[in-house]
Amino acid sequence: MVVSNAQSSILWRQVWGLSAVLAAVTFSWMAYGFYQPKILQDLGFVEMAQGLGILQGFMGAVAEPIVG
Image (cartoon, rainbow, N blue to C red; front, side, top):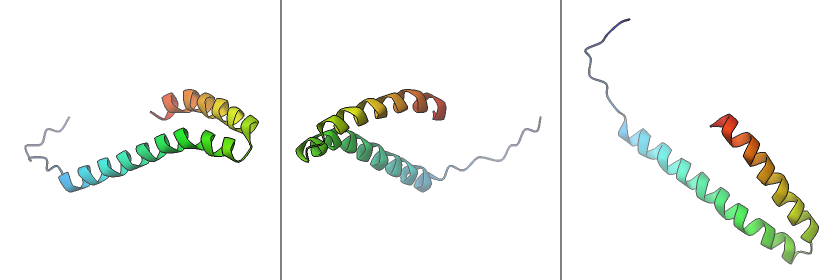
């Protein structure tokens, strides 16, 4: 094992930038999940809205633990 005495430099601009992108994606998916069923129901696709909600919930329950 190699131990280095060099002080590690944290690139804070990149950390904050990546955090901002992650927050934007997370909030976008939350808004999508909230408004998609309402939009589909307004357009007359009630059955599709229910089916997509169940499918997305199942896919999220399976995929999210896998991808972390």
